[in-house]
Image (cartoon, rainbow, N blue to C red; front, side, top):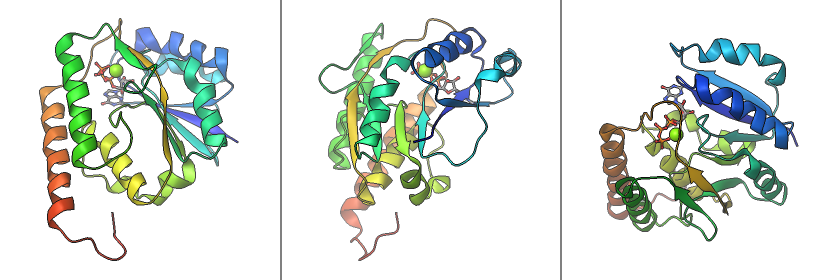
Length: 219
Ligand SMILES: Nc1nc2c(ncn2[C@@H]2O[C@H](COP(=O)(O)OP(=O)(O)OP(=O)(O)O)[C@@H](O)[C@H]2O)c(=O)[nH]1
Ligand SMILES: [Mg+2]
């Protein structure tokens, strides 16, 4: 089973080296860094550490993680094992037994918890954490759900992917993670992203209720 971590980075110079070393300490998984021309030189540093990055060919599993050390690489082997046992997607979940967040201000905790409860109920999804970005996908499942056709611009795409995977009948399981707040670098979370998420989830919930399902739904 060949697996790749897709790691988006924007100004993660202080995080990316400890991140890559922590990954290598637990797994020989490849890492594909998708840097957005970070002005702080993240890409140059990654190139220096480049001998640790593999080429991109036919992977069976795609893992997404944040570079800011919020997602503990130590959980990787458990996530890959669940895929191996038949899951199509594994979500590193803060809202199952054993999961949680540390260091978050109460406001952020409530927003995330409330947002997830709202999303889960309105869209009738089974995962307790639909907004976690720490995930492993079976590559075939990801390819089948038309991932390029997402309507969300912000983090709502995470919920959108769960919704599509669910509709296609893919098996999504959760494994607990303890999310640590970043200690280096700046958060890119914004009011706009939060507003977009709430609007889109509400829109999808209404569509599901008002529009009769076609026999073979295009989702
Ligand atoms: N390539 C790319 N990566 C980005 C961009 N914005 C954020 N990232 C990266 O995406 C990952 C997740 O985004 P974060 O910025 O960590 O989310 P956050 O703003 O830290 O929010 P919290 O950590 O939840 O406070 C991190 O690894 C970021 O470096 C972007 O515009 N382009
Ligand atoms: Mg983050």
